Length: 102
Image (cartoon, rainbow, N blue to C red; front, side, top):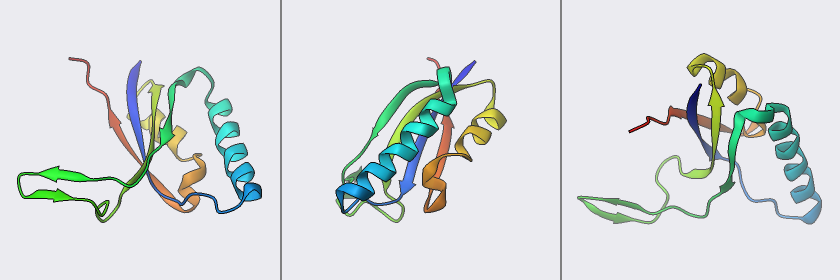
């Protein structure tokens, strides 16, 4: 089986404890539904900084990363099917890339 990085884009941090509980419950249910496919549930991330030959930009870019996970799947199509049920797809996106073994 291959490993895939799920990079989450969009969404926002919950503004209330009630909203936070609702969001966490949705993510926990999703991870539970994936079962052993979840290698590392990952974490949300803070504001990103981009470093390139042109310099440093700390605005997060046009579509900043909001979190990540490491998932195991038979192939890209299977990974896509898992990502389509992710809670963030209602208001953001999941970028999928196979983690290449070196």
